[in-house]
Amino acid sequence: MDDTIGRAEDLPPGSVTAAGSYAVGNSAGEYFAVGRRCRHLGADLAAGSIDADGCLVCPWHGAKYDVRTGRMVRGPQGIFRKIPGLGTAFRASPWCCHSPARASRCATATCT
Ligand code: FES
Image 1: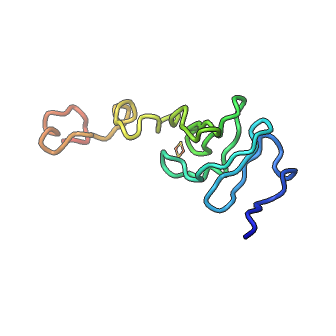
Image 2: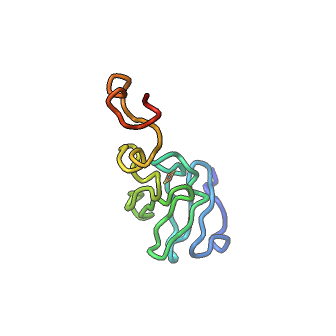
Image 3: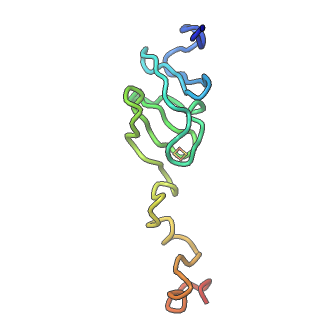
């Protein structure tokens, strides 16, 4: 069985591409392969980028992965950073996040 996924010269430093269920790339001259789905909401990490630290950055919300370990070293950024916690994103929302039992005590207009 041939395990070849491509030629090294087709994967220059700073590039990422898809190879089956893996995102493969070149981080400062070191080749890597990690699972293709972001652990946040499943974006395709093969469409990500390599940042100045040599980490793989998710194309959707900026989660950052150490390609040597596969570990997420920075969580999602922007309004999605609190998922699954409901802190800031929900407080800034015009929707009420209370259960029907608590909605009657809520000052949010949409609860009434
Ligand atoms: S899907 Fe990757 S950071 Fe949100």
